[in-house]
Length: 317
Ligand SMILES: [Zn+2]
Image 1 (cartoon, rainbow, N blue to C red):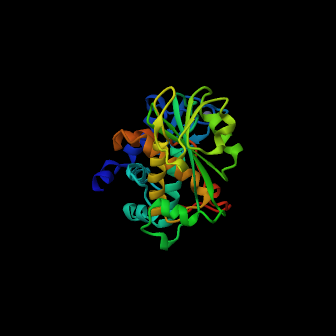
Image 2 (image 1 turned 90 degrees about the vertical axis):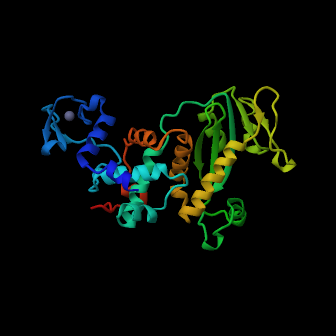
């Protein structure tokens, strides 16, 4: 851990890193009116727009997940590095210990950073796509500790409340996954998500679920029937038919969520799904490259109120 801390020790250097990542050649421009002329204020920490109709003050953190935070960027960067490098995710208790902050603060940072990991403006997938769904998002109980994800699923399966359906779409060609979260596994949700994410005419590999029957005219669907102990079979046209990549991903995500987070409410399920898919999709690059990639995605902030549904101040106040 010490090398991570020394890497992001100097606040000035962190700010320069963020400026270089956000602005072309690191040259500031006003996020409110787009003007490229500015005055340097507060010893270079902030800028003031030189457009006399605007004159707004801003910094590299304006409009990012770091906006209005009293915490130093060095701490944020360290947290980003820790969160994205951990294969199975990290609890806010552990993050609090690693960073030397209160658990509540770590929880908030954890959620804001996950917001940056969210997939935005994703192009349609094509080629061979595996589609498979699962259920998550209910309270994990202490007596489930040590059980395999499948066993926990089984114990939870009788309860419907606060359960979310999760759809995984694995791109066979790129080895990546895209995850979508719904309140329930209603056909319309699943079908809509498939249409919005997979281009028509693609090959769709699924299990025997009836959820995909209504898109059979739009995709070349091939299925493996798990109830008939069918897991991999020869395709009629291309590749082997299976949904093993999505199922492997569910294993990693559930072990992470059940084992590390202990509890997960439906409200936060989507963000966890984004975190796990982000890490999975960047598994072949180094921690350093992943950090830089994450830094490019910090635009768009999540307020404490959005997270908690309260109209109260954020914890770092
Ligand atoms: Zn301006």
